[in-house]
Image 1 (cartoon, chains in turn cyan, yellow, blue, red):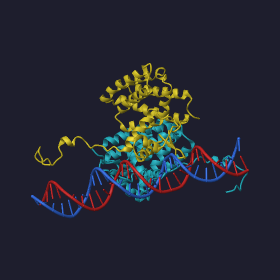
Image 2 (image 1 turned 120 degrees about the vertical axis):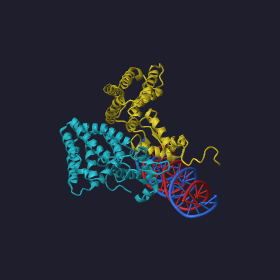
Image 3 (image 1 turned 180 degrees about the vertical axis):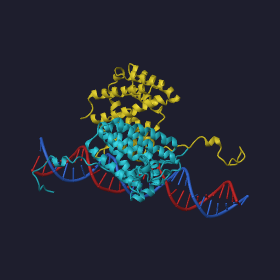
Image 4 (image 1 turned 135 degrees about the vertical axis):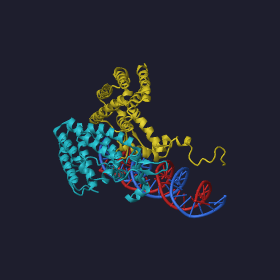
Length: 241
Length: 241
DNA sequence: TGCCGCGATCTGTGATCACAGTTAGACTGT
DNA sequence: ACAGTCTAACTGTGATCACAGATCGCGGCA
């Protein structure tokens, strides 16, 4: 092809140079995202089994990308493969639930603190927006549990992202991946918790504290939120052991 | 085969029942362990490149298990694949180093606290043992950096395991995987830090505080240790940006 | 000398095949 | 009626093949 446009641009034009390198997103990555969303939103119940081939067929891809995605989830114990070679969402014992909750209190509590200290302007704007979205769902006389779950997740992670510590956000995502199935699957089973639980109040306190730069207040609000949800789950008696 | 021993044991004997289900360890898992060890002990320098095929050949396995292991490490950013499809140990910018250090201070600091509170007898015994091992290496006139690195790691993780929170230990492993190449590669380059740095004193304080159940003291000792190592790394001026 | 083009080689990713191990169910012999 | 046996289908894991894209080196043109 001859050069029709400009006199020999050997250097890359600044207009092109500033678009940044486009990241390569593999099929396995996309399958992982898909499965992660299902787990975190509680659309897969604990004990739910799946097969690589059926997932591959459902998603219209080969078995290969599914293998990679599932392998990652198995590696961090968000899924498990039984000695029978069956893949399933892990069951949750009371002991494991309490362990995860303890770690969440520490890690997410710190994140809330940090978010209140070094809060980014752009994240703050999103915060109130997500809070309202959650409120709208909670007040809905016929609440869509899945939308409420999503709104709750987005509010929390807006706070976590405001820490400016992407590594920390990644860690918390891993925790939600493990606890999501229990937390949100039970929430969907009993949506009345949306109103009776203090979730909306905890969220209000949380957002207010972060906006005000009140680290201790933010931590307390978030801990209250986690503990409220945890005691609700424990009260349902669906945990093992 | 006829039954020579007992009258028709239709139930599984308790002697067999209590051995527990044996876990399936795949080749991919073993490759992952191998690579993880190399990263955490600083035997792979930042920027170091590798190819799936060469690793597979070195380890005497097919490319498949290597793919799985590398995919996991890439997923949590312990490795990265460039747009050129080249896999390498990520470079470390000053900003990223500080972010990782901030998260480590929070997470590992909490772990030290928790270890001092709920300390397990078995872990306590190991603690002093690992501390002595580290001391021995530090005092060695011709210290083997790799053994010192390993002793340091084992001491820290003995503390973390004493929390009784395996999830937390996993999180910290992920952090060490990311920061290990910088931390330990530089340590090997300048082993004099073993004596001049306050590492041995911090370790002494840490072990003493954990043994005494002094949560705040344990946290402080560990934070001092991390910050000491971090400021050493920053002073070497090998970080990017 | 400097620049461009072409081809051999190597890269990770995706698809397909092969296989050992497990499971479920029909069947058989007692 | 029941315990044991065998077969067919299905599981995840590992190996191999196929491929698009990137890199590097050699050669030729200006």
